[in-house]
Length: 56
Image (cartoon, rainbow, N blue to C red):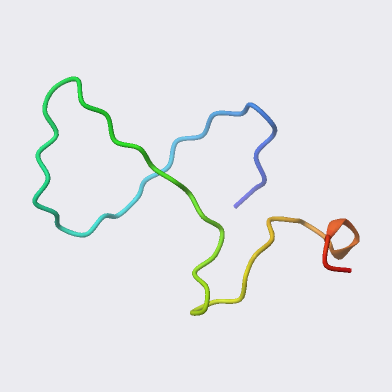
């Protein structure tokens, strides 16, 4: 695991649950990435150190 640089492109693999959607040729799928699963896990504010945290 490493932090990405601004503008860096990275390939990711995402495991999805079975769905009944059919995506026809030319259709697009939008993926929103979140850095938390609250309340299951504590919120990750996406900072690498406490000195940059807004909640201090």
